[in-house]
Amino acid sequence: MLAGIRNRLSYANVMATIAVFIALGAGAYAAGLAPNSVKSRHIAPDAVKGTDVSEGTLGQVPEAANADTLDNKDSGEFQSAGADEWTPLALNDGTFGTGCNWKKAFPNDFATPSYFRDREGVVHLRGMVRAAEGGQSSCGDYPEFDHFITFEGGRLQPGYRPGYRAVFSITSVNKPGRVDVLPDSSIQIEPGYPNFVDAKQWVSLDGISWRCAPSGENGCP
Image (cartoon, rainbow, N blue to C red; front, side, top):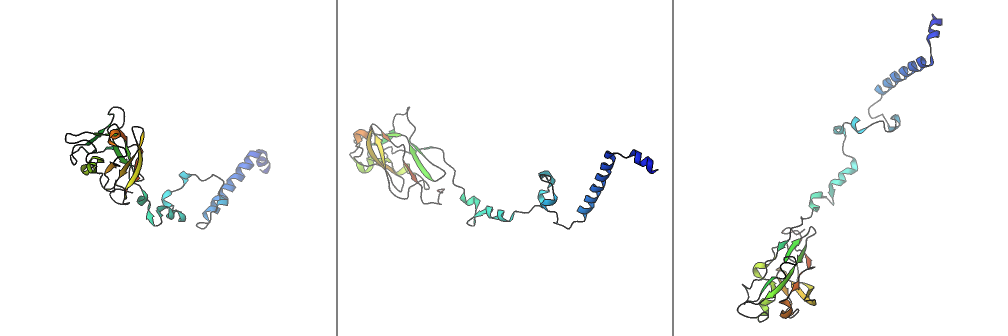
């Protein structure tokens, strides 16, 4: 009998039998391990895949709790206001003055005088304007009214206004000029700079910008 068994033994048979005993022994060993006793050294590299893990059984990584807040503020509190579309400026049409009014210059070549507030709360102007004679007087006869590019009904709404009187250097007929933006958001040229001879040709509003105020009110971030 032993001779018959010896005759049927081969290297492959022996190795297969050894593999079965090793597998059975490993299973018994794993079954006898205490909870949390399996360490990384017990697992072959890259043997455990993401699909082998039940995500519902995983808790939050201890330090990850800090990612939910910054200085004890929720992340939503740091989201800035969305940027606007360009909104046309309501120009001073002379209703509140004596006749001199403001219009868009070069209607077909340049942007409509307009404004928008970006995500950081900076209000931007663009476009070309010009002063135009009214029926009652010449531009410059009443500088307390005539030099306002926007006035009364053209003031920007709260949340778009500067917190102070802001002064900007601009260009008028390729000459230097000055435009001021007041805290009530009225926009004006400085009387005489440029003079109305130039202002009646064109005044550029491009590049004028300021930070909205007060922060945290009326959509101002």
